[in-house]
Image 1 (cartoon, rainbow, N blue to C red):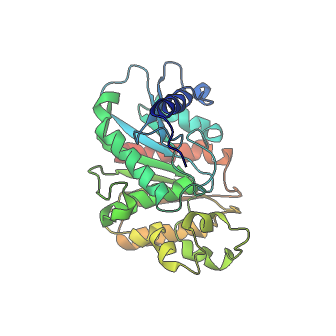
Image 2: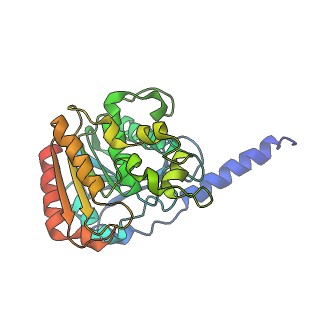
Length: 302
């Protein structure tokens, strides 16, 4: 294969950078008037559309406000940093109204790279935000994560595994300096081995098999390494967990199981099972849940 001329490569880089910079935001209307937007920031220093993040700041915010990082769902192979916001619009608005900075992140799909690529990206994103906190005006020592479904899994795994210092979970193999103060986990799977017997079709691999690059029952070592419950210990941050009773994709017992591990380790946690709720939707944006969520954040982000 012939090498592309240097000029062609340069133009390709400029084209990709321009495309990323011009990606329109479909969620601006969800935010209060005066919200400050920093969009499509490359956190990995490349042109990948999966290595972008947005930062949303309250109007006239004073330096040093807490930061909440939004990790989208989509079976590890769909959606982007705008996902889940449309049905959680009151919660999104509530973050800004309550004086929090919000960052929403992209990560590589499992169809592009198998685990732990997604976790490496999430860790790299948090590290970027930690290192650039002063520039954007938030407190690098007051960071919480919120994740939905696959994003709930990644947020939980990132926070729980951080104490274990697993080199493979970091892009450069080195554990970053940041600490996570709290996790808001919305219906994220916590133990992949529970799904091992149900994910057996090699011809039509299900999301967990795509993520792991193998059937969980054939590679229990990878399934265990990718399961948040594997890493629970007494030094983990507090968890606020929300799950639908009628979740057809992630059984609510996954959240109950995570809570059980957290309780055994003495980690503060709060679990809400939403009666009749499916896997996602506006039922999770209910006022009762929002009141609990912001009370939890006020306690753990100072």
